[in-house]
Image (cartoon, rainbow, N blue to C red; front, side):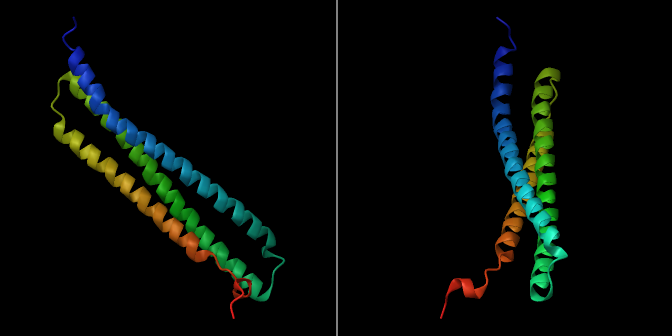
Length: 149
């Protein structure tokens, strides 16, 4: 029997957790791009109305466009962090297999790369939270629609 089989199996087992992290980051990217698409669609509708509005309605429209522009920047930053995190996870898995294949002792490097991946995940989630907060604060429901006395 091949002597390296248990070590390969252990390496694959060690790689499973980072691969789950990679899947999670992929799912986050799906959510982020969906939100970005919705924001872009909204901005297109508002820019079509821009020339036809005046007064208070125009001011509200411009303010909403400013918030939308800010949301797009925040979502793009979240996407950047998630992609960087995914790349770092790929490096992590590669380091685990390199450690096995070449016999290097890369424990410290693997640990640092894992921490970096977690940092990118944290940053992308933080930007996502910020974007959601921007979106919820930007929704202005006219008081007359609330039917309060």
